[in-house]
Length: 224
Image 1 (cartoon, rainbow, N blue to C red):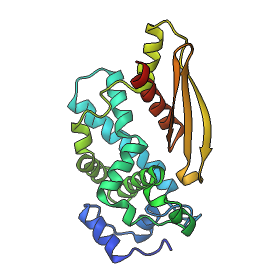
Image 2: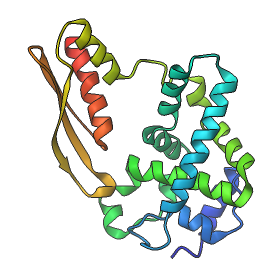
Image 3: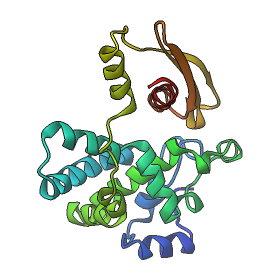
């Protein structure tokens, strides 16, 4: 399955400026493990994650004079799975990702986890086929709006809640996973955060970290 790319996928990659030459490489970048257990995006995702991190880190260093902590906060937001999935949706990755029958029926083409992973795998493929400069330039084109926005500038909800609890002489917030459901590629986590003698809030998201963040945000909206 991974040895061929449909003509429409080749045209799509060309339009993105990625100019595929090794069909096997790009097919793997777009293939989920449910479709091919041996030749899929996992190894390329590993490489692409580093490409994205370095590209964004250098970009922020050149663009801003902020301190290390602020740069790290922005970097984390800009390379997050959610941001990768947002970029993936905008450029149409869902139309080209290769999923097994069950994963597709379970909504895998819309999963933040899968779309984010494929986005990183594409960066890995760009690096291996064309070199770092091409991969970096792709990041600069497709992440431009996010970098120019306020992504990562606001205080992280969990940090804000931690500081709020300390300022109000309360114990640190406690996070509890209430439920985990769904298949691995589209799992849903429900988390409760509570502050002693104040209250609690719950939220559900596609990762434990995102659920904790959403619960902290809900708590601050309700009690902060």
